[in-house]
Length: 85
Image (tube, rainbow, N blue to C red; front, side, top):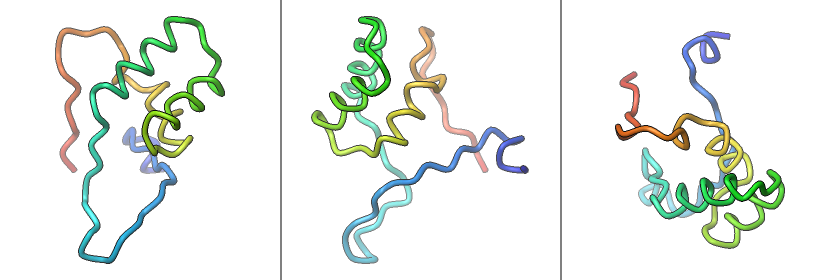
């Protein structure tokens, strides 16, 4: 309940590699966000968007859905920022 009220969403994803290969952050390339925006504007369904983005880059379907419904895709002049925890 605290996470939801704080706007924090947990997304299931793959973690691979040895323990020292793990990164604390995962950066979504700008071209992936642009592709999601483009497909959304074209009126593609969520399933079609997930299929095309998964072919473009190995990202979990849950992460793609999160990006699809997040503020990262809203037309704005400022860049999205990460909240400090």
